[in-house]
Image 1 (spheres, helix red, strand yellow):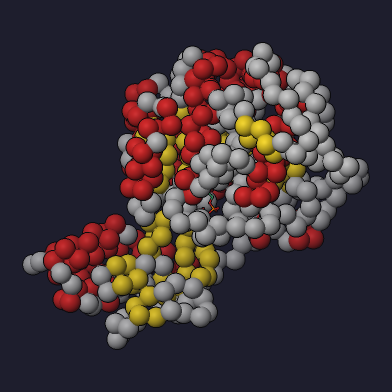
Image 2 (image 1 turned 45 degrees about the vertical axis):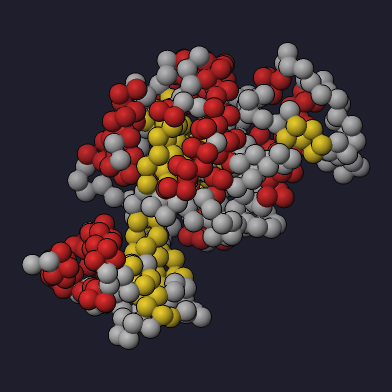
Length: 475
Ligand code: UTP
């Protein structure tokens, strides 16, 4: 029996044998690739997934008794939950000094909204020098090393589609000054796209499945399967600082957040999150809630708008805490999840247009309406799996300037404006005059390297620039 025959048998058992219908037309090499792709999607797992997510559209019902999740306010003196910033910081710094923290970037997404040709981490995000996103993070990690004496190892999740280009980018840039053994790349898993009507897996070409990365939630399994959890254990890493590839001003290893995560009594040290207060009920971010005593994230599209508009007596939003996809996770937590044979995060369904091959005729089809179901896992679905999970409020200007869209909100333009505003604030905090317009906005462009500062305090003792009106300052 050839490889194709063997795989055909497996496919027939799950009513997917159309996938090898054109195998006879392929070269040996192309056939081998097809077989590999089919094996990678574990055909036996498909019927359950198709029944649950493709043949029916899972309806999400907001659980009864859902409450807003409590959170640690950015200002420790404010609100019902007072806390000790210095103690949290000291705890986080101790972890960093002991080499117990690794950084983890999920960079396997397709970045289709931005429309950039290449891995998003290579995108020139710097306001002036066009420093790539990956360089921002590398410099943040180097600065963390300089401050605490140990440079955190950096794990980067790629996708099978962008893995090689990503690694080549680091090679070409000499790992941005990091040790190459301290940067670990691994590709995430993939999911096939399904025909919306029939539940059949789509063929992108006669010899290729229509595959896409399985979502940032795939990272929890990929950390294990890739051997990265073991690698972390060998290095003595206990906590993972998780962030996305699209936010140039993220704190790659925030001692205060890590300290809260690892040391406050109501945290299990398993999975913690940063939040931003939503600016409006309509803001499209997941919302931190409390359900049956557990912290959980409910997607904005799953929460009825009238609930999202509820307000407290002081006029603030009741469901205020928006998720910005910054987490801290215990290595042991991720290991525990993976040791459970039944562990899996749910899929989220999106109906999309996917170019494919007509399985009857072999003809290439370019659909004009959504013909496919794509399934992705989201990392925040792991939050309720933690025994106790805390949420920490941060400030937009301090650490959230994502690049998602080509224009408008969360675009390169909005990101560079926030980069400048943050640098301007930090400079003002150490006594530098920053010219501002009548609207209060900085009348200049500033690009701050994380090597210079990852927080305002780092600017003390630095040779500071004079900022003229309309200036472009790189520091
Ligand atoms: P997004 O939700 O912004 O998705 O990812 P995306 O694929 O990058 O962009 P669009 O939606 O196609 O425009 C948020 C973060 O999760 C990572 C992304 O790389 C980004 O850092 N991600 C997303 C993965 O690592 N894998 C995935 O399968 C999806």
